[in-house]
Length: 345
Image (tube, rainbow, N blue to C red; front, side, top):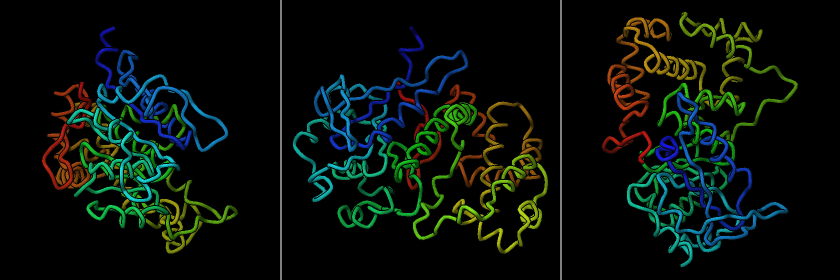
């Protein structure tokens, strides 16, 4: 079928000692992304360093149908975490077998790591001079082993255009949703999130909660206030109004909100408003003044300022490029030239 031929191929590299949960993330997220006619937008395949069984960190192995030569066909390669990386983790050095496997990857292929899968990309030199992250518990060791990498230990994920990395476990879900949003827009990503029953968007810069304990279960959270905000993004929002939803003082609410989300209430609201503006730019023909009002920015100038800061392009350019590319948006890579944010067939 034509839709199958055009699906963006994602190849997941299964390494010995892999974590089954993280191996399944690309299949779950990319596999739920559908086009307007219900066609799959991605084809997800798994390969190993050899065809056959791959041991996991659980009490079962998985059987992969493909060897490393499948990497040569990938538009995107995903490397999930493994607890048995050997010299990659110990010395920052690829094994001969892994070197031979990665040699199949074509230039220009998008590279993605989940958690300690970033060690593989770093050992191969793909992260030199680039921003990257990994699980917070490994970040210091990662930086010592790979001093040429610009490690950010606090974020959920990094996006440097054609190379993306995530922190541990659930951050891989956030990164894959971010990629779907980059490739096909907010509406498709939000539908994937809804079907997967996960938050549709956590900013990559959100903290990994390294030094902040989670609130005690018996204490009130800020969930109700956030739900209240989402119904009123187009209205002026005051911190006192948010705190009132949880019957807290402003000081207690602000502290609790940051503990739970990793950002201030103001930063969180701006992020949700940018997401709302993005949906309106993608799905409507509303004039910029109306988009600004409906998303809570008030004026076209304020809308332009915040969208430019978050996406690297103006609202007008974002809408024009999204429409012209049929759902694929070109965004500037951090500290580098613009890169296509959509699938390469």
